[in-house]
Image (cartoon, rainbow, N blue to C red; front, side, top):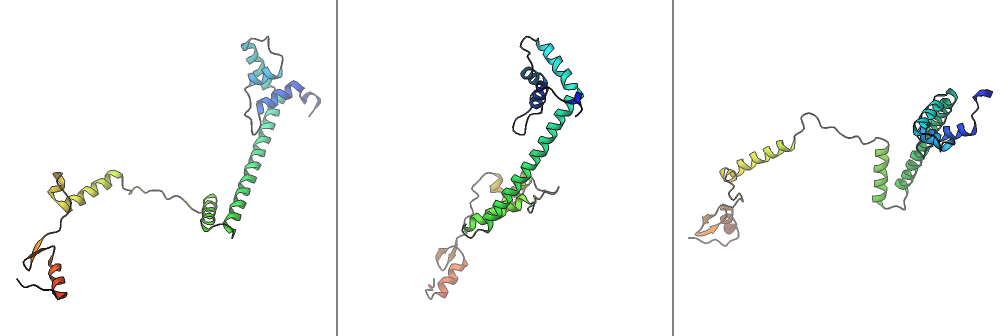
Length: 187
């Protein structure tokens, strides 16, 4: 920086407060000015005007941009290192013989998701809505139970009872069972 481009301590504090840090959001120009300069006796309007004038100075603007840019680079590096660390730890969990199978499978699932191995399938335009499904179910119920379904009657299916060799049975299968078991009764 040339001699006229260096910041005074108050300007540096203003720049730092406006730029913020990865952990702390930057302040407004007015609030940063209030904390950097003796502004107790200033009217709020004067405070805003002076803060805006200071922020418009090229060396101040460049310093703020530089700090914000550095913070973005630092934040990006921190995120990348954190992401890599998590992936390494998940790999360790997935391959550790000391972990139960469920833990290892879960670690593999998370690894797959983090690497984009599993992709969400999007529904096509031919996907059925809940109303479509409800209509289909109602149509099947009408087909199975006829008008009893429409009238709200008892739709519980009951087996048909037939007379088999003088006794009431459920089906012709009862007669077959009786005949094959050697317990046939002639009516």
